[in-house]
Length: 410
Image (cartoon, rainbow, N blue to C red; front, side, top):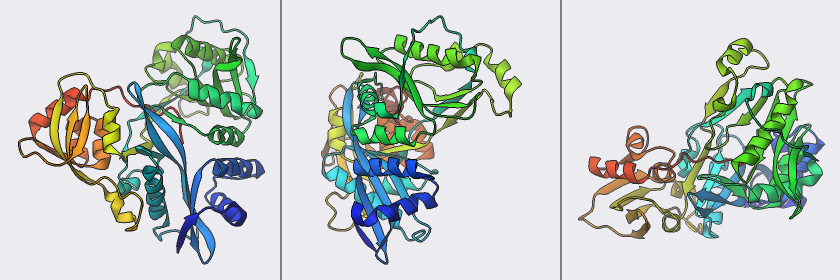
């Protein structure tokens, strides 16, 4: 078994085969999209008998933490061929990828999960539920008359990527910096199209949405993302969706942050009862499908500005990723003893102060608490986090954060 960097001249067809076997690609357009993504990513592969049988890839990005941006390693794919299964390839490759990105300055790493538990072994902790809604666009109760939009196609990827990076961002939102990520996503879209508006002064795309597929004349339509600079622009985009309601019976989208879509729908429960178990079922689902972990505790806390009285404590942090890394890895996780302060001026330093209370945590549980996915008191019940009752109460108080919303899937 050999781990090494991806060589496009040697490995491309083998990597195509891996993704065909797992049904991530099905045709030449998908292969083109995969190649674009690989071109803009850090890619590692594992060989068996001289052939690539597993690959992982990451792209540099940022996560918004309240008002600050923190560097992110976005793990965009972890895949293993039929031949390479149950040999520990994916875990070791992912750990190596995170270590390389962390050594180069990524303070956080994040990924999407295929199920609960696997990436916990590498120190990742689960984010909050994301709410996906399906609704009849004609049921939108809006007092908005949007002007005629411009059409967007897969050829407009440069405009779209700049618009995504410039969008309004809130706590937890991710941005992937390399344009290949947007270009490949648009290329992947079956019958993909977008609608939006140009800023006449800058000649840039001010707000838009991208629809990745349309299943027939009446939908469902799937909105991959919506980008806007303020909530009026969001309402204009929703107005465009409403305008499709004379033909389209169902649109599915991830609920925008700070908005409760039910406020904007006419008779949502009646519509659900009428469409239950049909192709056009108007309902919602909540799923926690992404995970994140801290890779540099000191840097993350430097960007942590909280309101309220500061809390200082000892932190004994366990990082299981070290079990998957070679002894000469450029970064070996963040296990250790720290003195941590959370408050208007947060910080962490190596050490232990016997006069302070002790919090014991895995890096995944601590990350979940820090980013606001779940309060410390809840994590004491369901995750690997423990401390004195008074300290837990203070942590619940100081870490009153908006639910983090990833907003850019990867």
